[in-house]
Image 1 (tube, helix red, strand yellow):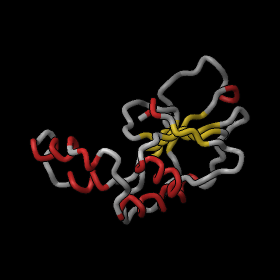
Image 2 (cartoon, helix red, strand yellow):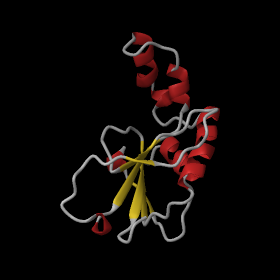
Image 3 (cartoon, one colour):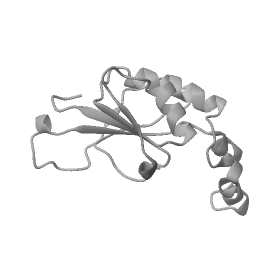
Image 4 (tube, helix red, strand yellow):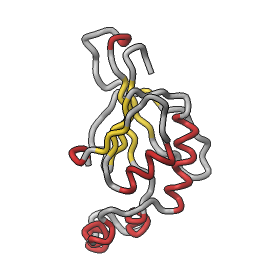
Length: 144
């Protein structure tokens, strides 16, 4: 992080932009460092700003169940509306993606980690970012 720190937010669904973002690498691709994407022109010098990293959860069993189904199709919609997938765990591929994510975030030292309380987000944090010394972890329902 910078002199004023940074923190991670592991989300159930990423629907916003961030100052810095990470995509979970696809299997077979080389882990790459987090790419910086500036989407805001700051009114303060960068040294006075926090860096926020948004990380989407790795593949969950619900994503695996919907894989191959056409976007917007009744079958795909039915998968995501089925209560069995509400708090789904990571799939085998999701666990592999976490290994690649861990490699790309190991150099970062956040001041705080904010994570959705859903199992897939917690598993992504634990396997893909992991506990960091001095960084408390907050699981907040409001970011789900």
